[in-house]
View 1 (tube, rainbow, N blue to C red):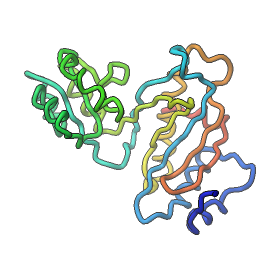
View 2: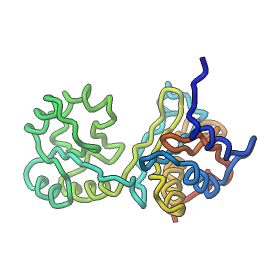
View 3: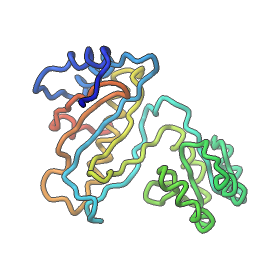
Length: 238
């Protein structure tokens, strides 16, 4: 049986024009207009690519820093020892530890959004792969979450601003939050530009021809709004 949608969802769909592709600015205005849930909905971008994730040279993984954040407090956990502990704490990390933090996570503690680690502790963290990996929380040099002790403070500050990890799922789609429906339209467009700019820079070398096939902007409870690729893929961080 086809899924039944609420009256609110159907009303939002009615705002869309048939066979219309929207510029980023138009789409942002529309998602703000159609976000009618009782909570502040998350705005997301979904990019369907021409990649085949089974091939290493067609995979994409990286991090985009959103200039206006994600609209929530990002809880940062840092695996560190020595002087790096104080640097992480002073920079705003909520949880800092080494062996003790590993034990807490093994015991079920997962009250954080981002993990950062120094290279010397990665050997201890390795056994947490099954816990952190499936949640996308495993520290990784490619996402800037494994850093030298003297870079810990900057890494924590960047994480607190609102970083989103970009990677393909098994169907070659990249999903990313770009803010909240309550954000100003300009803030959402600038956050979207940060994601698109990063995706363009990280385009896999193994891709022949166009990389992104389709792009949609949506909210947690709203319909998908088709984006005009030409104007979307030219977005850049000013």
